[in-house]
Image 1 (cartoon, protein in one colour):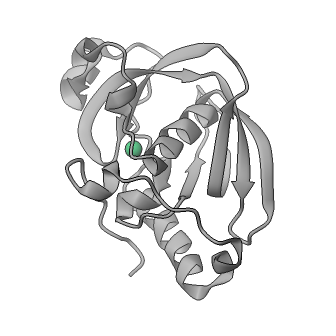
Image 2: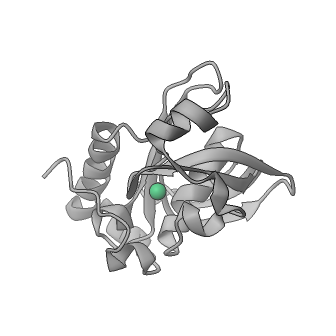
Length: 182
Ligand SMILES: [Zn+2]
C-alpha cells in the first residue's frame, strides 16, 4: 500500500490529537512502512509535507521535503517523530498556505519565522535543530496536524481565504507559491 488516501476536513482523525510513538517501535517494519508510504503519498499529491493523521494514523509523525525554487532552497527529506516545536523567533510572518486535506483553498497564515525542532528521527535517534523561513512554516503546519489543528484555525482574517483558481487570478502576490503544504 505505497500511496495512501489523504483524508479531508470533516474526518475526525484530523481533529484528534495524535499519540506519541514509543521510540523502540520506530524500528518496526510497520512504522518503517508507514514512513515510506507517507513520503510516497506526499510526493504523489505534490505536497511538501504530510502528517500521519492525514492518512488516518493518529501517531506523532510527519515528513517533509521540498525542491528549491527562486524563493527558497532545497529542503531534504526530514522524518520527525514525537516532535516538540518551540518558537525560536518572536517574529511572525504572513504567507499563503494550502493543505492537502483542505483541497483548493489558500489563505494567509501567520507563522514564526524560525522554530526549534526537537524529537526523534525514523531510526529513533535524537533530533534537535532550528528551522527557518519556508521550512519553519512547513514544520509548524505539520506539527499543528498532530494536535488536531488546521491552517484555517490559525488565520487571523478569513477574508484572505480563497479558491486556488480565483486566488491565482486576483490575490496571489508576485512571490506567492502555489503549493499546498501538506
Ligand atoms: Zn495540512
